[in-house]
Image (cartoon, rainbow, N blue to C red; front, side):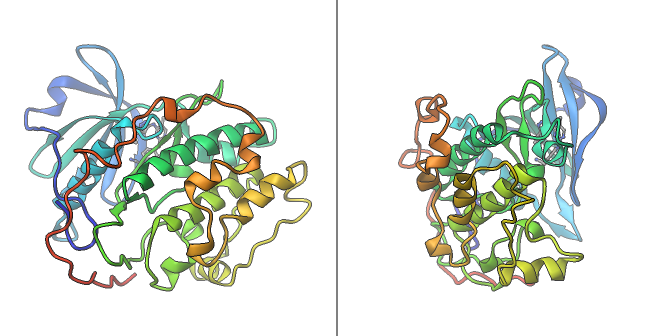
Amino acid sequence: MMNRNGMVTHMQTRIRTDPFSSNYTLVGKELGRGKFAVVKKCVDKSTGKEYAAKFLRKRRKGEDCRMDIINEIAILEMAKFSPHVVDLREVYETNSELILVLEYAAGGEIFNQCLADHGDAFTEKDVIRLIRQILNGVAYLHRNNVVHLDLKPQNILLTNSNPLGDIRIVDFGLSRRVDAVKEIREILGTPEYVAPEILNYEPISTATDMWSIGVLTYVMLTGESPFLGDNKQETFLNISQMNIQYSQDVFEGITDLAIDFIKALLIKNPRKRAKAEQCLQHPWLASCPDIPDLLKEPDLSQSEHELDTPQDDDELVLMAS
Ligand SMILES: Cc1cnc(Nc2ccc(CC#N)cc2)nc1Nc1cc(C2CC2)[nH]n1
């Protein structure tokens, strides 16, 4: 089932109402915190296995937001066959919260290694391998007509940081189905990574995620955020005016193929931007072989997992930023 702004309203996971604390022990400090969610590491009491528990408040600013959380759960369910999307184990509900028990990625956010000093920063070879995994995960979502809409280094986790492990895409709190609605025109995402069409209230599409992957690649290779200004307005201006440099000093030691890859994504017109499947064929990614991911994941784009089409086709409500 879909509603009019591309949110999924139907899920299959059984929601448990027995106490989360009967089965899990919380350990250590918080892993992450958002406006209406907190993420904590936990351990399954019966197996000792580690998970991440995401506590999401159902009421936000006096509104019932339970359906927003159902949307996130349904998208995690749909993506369960992708090895690059964090796995959802089970869901609990209390009076005030829904609790998602998710796969634990011990390596944390790639954000931390993007900014690391030269010694611990990613090599170009690391970035090629990680970007290929991100593209495989995003290609899977796009084949299933889902856009993430908040791709950034804080939402790409590592199974292990040293030795460098594999990526897991997390946080589908802003994600939407793009096939079920004529146009999604909401201001979403994080300023440094939002695509120009978001700022101009133009239609959001899978190309919106591809722009974010272009920014992400730039940051992973250089440690610099290409459009970051002194404040949100300046950042938005840099994006809408395409104020981006590929200077020799910032890209010292980085191949021209890498720059060519980024330039295929940081294109203002979304229709001209490379798609995930095209990116996977780019010579920059072909420069170091890896196990073909498609061998690991069935493609469910045409299957019983297909979400229902929407009941009504009203125009989307234009959301204020
Ligand atoms: C070691 C660790 C360190 N830092 C974060 N940060 C983080 C980033 C984004 C979100 C946003 C979300 N969702 C939550 C936490 N997650 C970690 N492990 C996780 C985190 C998780 C699941 C995704 C929560 N599994 N393993």
